[in-house]
Image (cartoon, rainbow, N blue to C red; front, side, top):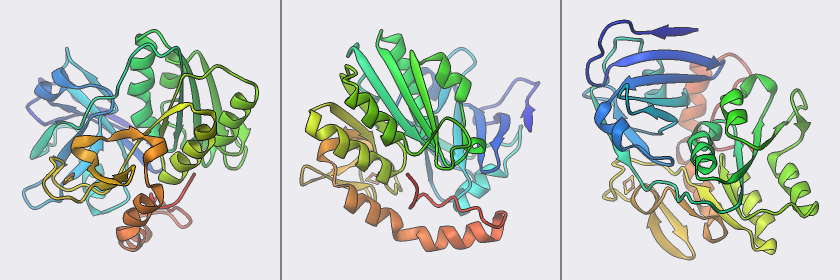
Length: 294
Ligand code: FES
Protein backbone atom coordinates (compact mmCIF):
# COMPACT_ATOMS: atom_id res chain seq x y z
CA UNK A 1 0.00 0.00 0.00
CA UNK A 2 1.30 3.43 -0.85
CA UNK A 3 -0.01 7.01 -0.54
CA UNK A 4 1.69 10.13 -1.87
CA UNK A 5 1.03 13.86 -1.88
CA UNK A 6 0.39 15.91 -5.01
CA UNK A 7 0.33 19.46 -3.55
CA UNK A 8 3.18 21.59 -2.22
CA UNK A 9 3.91 20.23 1.26
CA UNK A 10 3.91 22.20 4.49
CA UNK A 11 6.54 21.87 7.23
CA UNK A 12 6.45 18.49 9.03
CA UNK A 13 3.73 17.19 6.72
CA UNK A 14 3.68 13.52 5.67
CA UNK A 15 4.23 13.46 1.89
CA UNK A 16 4.38 9.70 1.37
CA UNK A 17 3.40 6.59 3.29
CA UNK A 18 4.30 3.03 2.36
CA UNK A 19 3.57 -0.29 4.03
CA UNK A 20 6.74 -2.32 3.46
CA UNK A 21 5.54 -5.57 5.00
CA UNK A 22 3.11 -6.85 7.61
CA UNK A 23 4.99 -5.17 10.46
CA UNK A 24 6.94 -2.31 8.86
CA UNK A 25 5.96 1.13 7.55
CA UNK A 26 7.83 3.98 5.90
CA UNK A 27 6.92 7.63 6.27
CA UNK A 28 8.44 10.43 4.21
CA UNK A 29 8.07 13.86 5.76
CA UNK A 30 8.74 17.39 4.50
CA UNK A 31 11.45 18.73 6.83
CA UNK A 32 13.91 20.71 4.65
CA UNK A 33 16.06 22.07 7.51
CA UNK A 34 16.76 18.52 8.71
CA UNK A 35 17.20 17.06 5.19
CA UNK A 36 19.90 19.58 4.32
CA UNK A 37 22.01 18.74 7.40
CA UNK A 38 21.40 14.97 7.54
CA UNK A 39 24.18 12.38 7.56
CA UNK A 40 24.23 8.58 7.78
CA UNK A 41 23.86 7.33 11.35
CA UNK A 42 21.87 10.30 12.68
CA UNK A 43 18.34 10.28 14.07
CA UNK A 44 15.43 12.60 14.82
CA UNK A 45 12.89 12.76 17.64
CA UNK A 46 9.22 12.96 16.72
CA UNK A 47 6.39 14.25 18.84
CA UNK A 48 3.24 13.46 16.90
CA UNK A 49 0.88 15.57 19.03
CA UNK A 50 1.14 17.90 22.04
CA UNK A 51 0.61 15.07 24.55
CA UNK A 52 2.54 12.38 22.63
CA UNK A 53 5.69 10.64 23.82
CA UNK A 54 8.95 11.48 22.10
CA UNK A 55 9.95 8.87 19.50
CA UNK A 56 13.60 8.59 18.40
CA UNK A 57 13.95 7.18 14.86
CA UNK A 58 17.07 6.90 12.73
CA UNK A 59 17.08 8.58 9.33
CA UNK A 60 16.70 5.91 6.69
CA UNK A 61 17.08 8.31 3.75
CA UNK A 62 16.71 11.99 2.90
CA UNK A 63 16.46 14.18 -0.16
CA UNK A 64 18.12 17.59 0.18
CA UNK A 65 16.50 18.89 -3.05
CA UNK A 66 12.96 17.88 -2.16
CA UNK A 67 13.52 18.71 1.51
CA UNK A 68 12.26 15.35 2.72
CA UNK A 69 13.37 12.80 5.30
CA UNK A 70 12.27 9.15 5.47
CA UNK A 71 11.91 6.81 8.42
CA UNK A 72 11.17 3.11 8.55
CA UNK A 73 9.67 1.71 11.74
CA UNK A 74 7.70 -1.09 13.31
CA UNK A 75 4.65 -0.49 15.45
CA UNK A 76 5.92 -1.92 18.72
CA UNK A 77 4.50 0.49 21.27
CA UNK A 78 1.85 3.17 21.76
CA UNK A 79 3.93 5.91 20.12
CA UNK A 80 4.98 4.01 17.00
CA UNK A 81 1.39 2.80 16.60
CA UNK A 82 0.31 6.47 16.75
CA UNK A 83 2.96 7.33 14.13
CA UNK A 84 1.83 4.45 11.93
CA UNK A 85 -1.74 5.80 11.93
CA UNK A 86 -0.67 9.02 10.20
CA UNK A 87 -1.59 9.46 6.55
CA UNK A 88 -0.37 11.68 3.73
CA UNK A 89 -1.21 15.36 4.48
CA UNK A 90 -1.14 14.76 8.27
CA UNK A 91 1.28 16.97 10.15
CA UNK A 92 3.69 15.95 12.90
CA UNK A 93 3.65 18.53 15.65
CA UNK A 94 7.38 18.59 16.36
CA UNK A 95 10.53 17.05 14.85
CA UNK A 96 13.97 17.66 16.41
CA UNK A 97 17.08 16.78 14.45
CA UNK A 98 19.30 15.69 13.02
CA UNK A 99 20.61 14.36 16.36
CA UNK A 100 23.55 12.13 17.27
CA UNK A 101 26.90 11.84 15.57
CA UNK A 102 27.21 10.96 11.91
CA UNK A 103 28.79 7.59 11.07
CA UNK A 104 32.53 7.76 10.61
CA UNK A 105 32.85 7.22 6.87
CA UNK A 106 36.09 7.00 4.94
CA UNK A 107 37.73 4.70 2.43
CA UNK A 108 38.64 1.83 4.77
CA UNK A 109 39.10 -0.67 1.94
CA UNK A 110 36.64 -3.51 2.46
CA UNK A 111 33.72 -2.72 4.75
CA UNK A 112 31.26 -5.40 5.83
CA UNK A 113 27.80 -4.16 6.80
CA UNK A 114 25.92 -6.71 8.90
CA UNK A 115 22.29 -5.92 9.60
CA UNK A 116 19.21 -7.70 10.85
CA UNK A 117 15.50 -6.95 10.80
CA UNK A 118 14.66 -3.27 11.11
CA UNK A 119 18.41 -2.57 11.41
CA UNK A 120 18.51 -2.67 7.60
CA UNK A 121 16.77 0.72 7.56
CA UNK A 122 19.64 2.16 9.61
CA UNK A 123 22.30 0.20 7.71
CA UNK A 124 21.23 1.34 4.26
CA UNK A 125 22.48 4.98 4.48
CA UNK A 126 25.71 3.72 6.10
CA UNK A 127 26.32 1.19 3.29
CA UNK A 128 25.49 3.87 0.69
CA UNK A 129 27.94 6.36 2.23
CA UNK A 130 30.65 3.67 2.47
CA UNK A 131 30.15 2.83 -1.20
CA UNK A 132 30.30 6.52 -2.18
CA UNK A 133 33.58 6.85 -0.22
CA UNK A 134 35.11 4.14 -2.44
CA UNK A 135 34.89 1.07 -0.19
CA UNK A 136 34.19 -2.44 -1.36
CA UNK A 137 30.95 -3.00 0.54
CA UNK A 138 29.96 -6.54 1.51
CA UNK A 139 26.47 -6.61 2.97
CA UNK A 140 25.00 -9.40 5.07
CA UNK A 141 21.27 -8.91 5.59
CA UNK A 142 19.16 -11.10 7.84
CA UNK A 143 15.47 -11.47 8.66
CA UNK A 144 13.28 -14.02 10.43
CA UNK A 145 11.66 -14.99 7.10
CA UNK A 146 11.50 -13.81 3.47
CA UNK A 147 8.46 -11.60 4.04
CA UNK A 148 10.28 -9.45 6.57
CA UNK A 149 13.09 -8.17 4.34
CA UNK A 150 13.11 -4.46 3.62
CA UNK A 151 15.20 -2.36 1.18
CA UNK A 152 16.50 -5.46 -0.64
CA UNK A 153 17.01 -3.65 -3.96
CA UNK A 154 18.47 -0.55 -2.31
CA UNK A 155 20.99 -2.68 -0.38
CA UNK A 156 21.90 -4.60 -3.57
CA UNK A 157 22.52 -1.29 -5.38
CA UNK A 158 25.13 -0.12 -2.84
CA UNK A 159 26.85 -3.48 -2.26
CA UNK A 160 29.68 -5.13 -4.18
CA UNK A 161 28.60 -8.45 -2.66
CA UNK A 162 25.43 -9.21 -0.73
CA UNK A 163 24.27 -12.21 1.28
CA UNK A 164 20.77 -12.81 2.65
CA UNK A 165 19.92 -15.07 5.58
CA UNK A 166 16.64 -16.15 7.14
CA UNK A 167 15.97 -18.05 10.35
CA UNK A 168 13.70 -20.46 8.42
CA UNK A 169 15.66 -20.70 5.14
CA UNK A 170 12.82 -19.11 3.12
CA UNK A 171 15.32 -16.74 1.41
CA UNK A 172 19.10 -16.95 1.15
CA UNK A 173 21.09 -19.02 3.61
CA UNK A 174 19.23 -20.67 6.51
CA UNK A 175 20.78 -19.37 9.68
CA UNK A 176 22.06 -16.12 11.09
CA UNK A 177 24.05 -13.20 9.65
CA UNK A 178 26.87 -14.17 12.01
CA UNK A 179 27.19 -17.54 10.20
CA UNK A 180 27.97 -15.75 6.93
CA UNK A 181 30.50 -13.42 8.56
CA UNK A 182 32.10 -16.42 10.24
CA UNK A 183 32.53 -18.15 6.87
CA UNK A 184 33.97 -14.97 5.25
CA UNK A 185 36.53 -14.74 8.06
CA UNK A 186 37.30 -18.48 7.71
CA UNK A 187 37.86 -17.95 3.96
CA UNK A 188 40.40 -15.22 4.86
CA UNK A 189 38.35 -12.54 3.12
CA UNK A 190 40.16 -9.22 3.62
CA UNK A 191 37.96 -7.24 6.00
CA UNK A 192 39.03 -3.78 7.20
CA UNK A 193 35.96 -2.83 9.19
CA UNK A 194 32.58 -4.26 10.19
CA UNK A 195 29.44 -2.23 10.89
CA UNK A 196 26.92 -4.22 12.95
CA UNK A 197 23.41 -2.78 13.03
CA UNK A 198 20.41 -4.61 14.47
CA UNK A 199 19.21 -6.31 17.65
CA UNK A 200 21.77 -6.10 20.50
CA UNK A 201 22.14 -9.90 20.68
CA UNK A 202 23.19 -9.95 17.01
CA UNK A 203 25.68 -7.07 17.49
CA UNK A 204 27.08 -8.80 20.56
CA UNK A 205 27.63 -12.05 18.63
CA UNK A 206 29.31 -10.14 15.77
CA UNK A 207 31.61 -8.35 18.25
CA UNK A 208 32.60 -11.70 19.77
CA UNK A 209 33.34 -13.05 16.28
CA UNK A 210 35.59 -10.20 15.15
CA UNK A 211 37.39 -9.54 18.46
CA UNK A 212 39.90 -12.44 18.21
CA UNK A 213 40.73 -11.38 14.64
CA UNK A 214 41.23 -7.74 15.67
CA UNK A 215 38.80 -6.55 12.99
CA UNK A 216 37.60 -3.07 13.87
CA UNK A 217 33.85 -3.33 14.55
CA UNK A 218 31.30 -0.58 15.02
CA UNK A 219 27.91 -1.16 16.65
CA UNK A 220 24.98 1.21 16.26
CA UNK A 221 23.26 1.17 19.67
CA UNK A 222 19.54 1.50 20.18
CA UNK A 223 18.91 2.13 23.90
CA UNK A 224 15.74 3.74 25.26
CA UNK A 225 15.88 7.50 24.62
CA UNK A 226 13.80 10.37 25.94
CA UNK A 227 15.22 13.83 25.27
CA UNK A 228 17.93 12.81 22.77
CA UNK A 229 20.12 15.67 23.93
CA UNK A 230 22.21 14.27 26.76
CA UNK A 231 20.11 15.57 29.66
CA UNK A 232 17.84 12.74 30.87
CA UNK A 233 20.30 9.84 31.09
CA UNK A 234 17.79 7.32 29.68
CA UNK A 235 20.16 6.25 26.90
CA UNK A 236 23.19 5.58 29.09
CA UNK A 237 25.40 2.71 27.97
CA UNK A 238 28.67 1.33 29.33
CA UNK A 239 31.61 1.59 26.96
CA UNK A 240 34.89 0.18 28.23
CA UNK A 241 33.46 0.43 31.76
CA UNK A 242 32.59 4.12 31.44
CA UNK A 243 29.10 5.60 31.17
CA UNK A 244 28.32 7.28 27.87
CA UNK A 245 25.10 8.65 26.41
CA UNK A 246 24.17 7.08 23.08
CA UNK A 247 22.30 10.20 21.95
CA UNK A 248 25.24 12.61 22.18
CA UNK A 249 28.31 10.32 22.38
CA UNK A 250 26.95 7.80 19.83
CA UNK A 251 24.86 6.14 18.59
CA UNK A 252 27.88 4.30 17.08
CA UNK A 253 30.55 2.86 19.38
CA UNK A 254 33.47 0.44 19.24
CA UNK A 255 31.55 -2.86 19.46
CA UNK A 256 34.42 -4.56 21.30
CA UNK A 257 33.99 -2.15 24.22
CA UNK A 258 30.19 -2.19 24.57
CA UNK A 259 28.57 -3.85 27.58
CA UNK A 260 25.83 -5.60 25.58
CA UNK A 261 24.48 -7.55 28.59
CA UNK A 262 23.63 -4.30 30.36
CA UNK A 263 22.14 -2.81 27.17
CA UNK A 264 19.87 -5.85 26.70
CA UNK A 265 18.78 -5.75 30.32
CA UNK A 266 17.86 -2.07 30.12
CA UNK A 267 15.98 -2.60 26.84
CA UNK A 268 13.77 -5.19 28.55
CA UNK A 269 12.35 -2.52 30.88
CA UNK A 270 9.22 -1.99 28.75
CA UNK A 271 9.06 -5.40 27.07
CA UNK A 272 5.94 -6.54 28.95
CA UNK A 273 4.05 -3.35 28.03
CA UNK A 274 5.12 -3.61 24.37
CA UNK A 275 4.08 -7.25 24.18
CA UNK A 276 0.71 -6.51 25.77
CA UNK A 277 0.13 -3.70 23.30
CA UNK A 278 1.28 -5.90 20.42
CA UNK A 279 -1.28 -8.53 21.39
CA UNK A 280 -3.98 -5.89 21.19
CA UNK A 281 -2.97 -4.63 17.75
CA UNK A 282 -1.34 -7.49 15.87
CA UNK A 283 -2.25 -10.77 14.26
CA UNK A 284 -1.84 -13.89 16.42
CA UNK A 285 1.74 -15.12 16.42
CA UNK A 286 3.33 -11.78 15.60
CA UNK A 287 5.70 -10.33 18.15
CA UNK A 288 7.66 -7.27 17.21
CA UNK A 289 9.23 -6.60 20.58
CA UNK A 290 12.85 -5.60 20.08
CA UNK A 291 14.02 -7.37 23.24
CA UNK A 292 14.54 -10.62 21.32
CA UNK A 293 15.82 -11.69 17.93
CA UNK A 294 19.13 -12.29 16.22
S1 FES B 1 18.18 10.34 25.52
FE1 FES B 1 18.40 11.54 27.29
S2 FES B 1 20.52 11.56 27.67
FE2 FES B 1 20.31 10.50 25.79
